[in-house]
Image 1 (cartoon, rainbow, N blue to C red):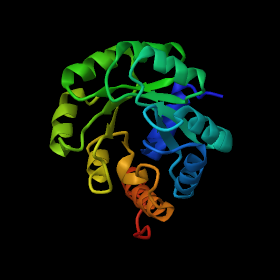
Image 2: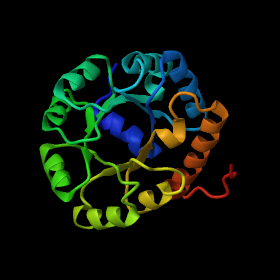
Image 3: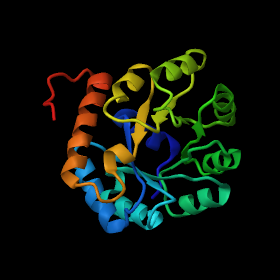
Image 4: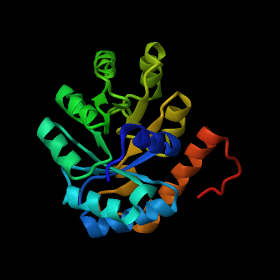
Length: 222
């Protein structure tokens, strides 16, 4: 069953992290990786359309975890792909770019959509269309100064920071007002990263996000 917009947004806001899987993540690999991530306290998963068996992997993870995880589809570049993802049960739609047709399609189905934006004009246009969350991408190479300057006049909007994010900058983005941070490569690799490394990195991120969002202190350092 697909989550509605408010439920999916609640998962993203509370958890502060979205784990992406781009590359070789067929269902069996996806289940192993998401199991490690769930154990580390990460429960929002983005599969990517330009990866191996993304829809099958997404559906396998949804069946495994049910309402305990929020599982959606990313790299959704056009309306046809959005409809395919929605018909397959995606809990949310994410894109690296702003396509009005993709946003409208998700909104009609009451499914959360986070279009990719990077300029003030894109932010204003996507927000005016009704996007409940804006994916600022690729923000990592531009850095925290760019995010702070962009958000200053747009602080009524809700941003997720993606692209070049890691444990080195997640804290800064969250403290500057990001709802969440998403990442794929640094956290999950391309399908062959050792599970213990994924677990260590996920626990480190969980520690950082909890410190920012909830004031958790004295968490064991990985």
